[in-house]
Image (tube, rainbow, N blue to C red):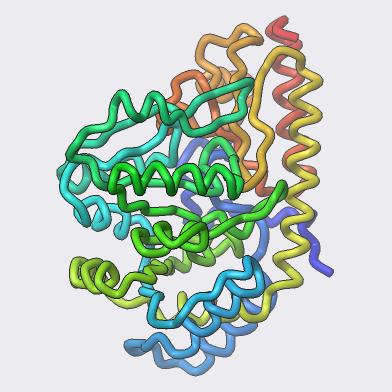
Length: 375
């Protein structure tokens, strides 16, 4: 029903992805897909714009629509009062760093803004690498115990994980909840990629068990799932009323989501299920194509992406010293530097694009590998 193969020219639209860097480079970096938004979203926005007045808004039906989405997608029962609407998720990460004293605990590699949030909030942080077994990443509790500060009372979880693409299983989440309970940790779960899962199923953190429900803040929104990052809006799901009151009290500088952002979110969550299903199938095909091409290069290693549209790749076994720079200098591809996420030498490649663009990018890489005698 939807043409994800259509190549839409984004040059000259003030796109941070396409208009920030040298136009000679093919941008496959920031987590922003090259697909048009769902038709119901575009229709709703046009109707709202035609009204012509853009005053202050109220939540309206959006909390109820989010509750319905969570129940249909994940079987998760959410009460409307649990939801705190946010103008964006990134500022909330910084606020959440101050929800508890002590340095937050964060695994690496991880989403760069999440990694930077404690420092931006004027706090230290405890960084603990994930355990890497042949590019399959898991939480290393032995290492966490070695580095855990007695003053740390906050743990940041990213699930689905950006950039390594893990979708944590129920058993893994239960183990994390037991650990959090043992060490009196409040968990902030960044789940902005929750609608983009290819292996297993996404399990919202607050549904894991009673402790997870009572001692957590779960962050989600329509930006990644429906490709609406420029219409910024987020939601914090906080079942514990005291914790919710504490968080909302710290969010006093935030404005409400804009009327257009709320309009887009309503149409996305309420009316765009068919588009969403087809998108996930298309992205799964992109992932499979990308992994097959990378395997044909022989030597480079990469994650099997279970969720997100981001591939985590180590090209160094092919003989590249600095893959991020090599990709720019030779095939002219702009990926994301793994150092940004806490793992030097890796790159993160965005495959949220038409298949022809992805094919062209892999053709460029293969040709450059042959020219440089690395393949």
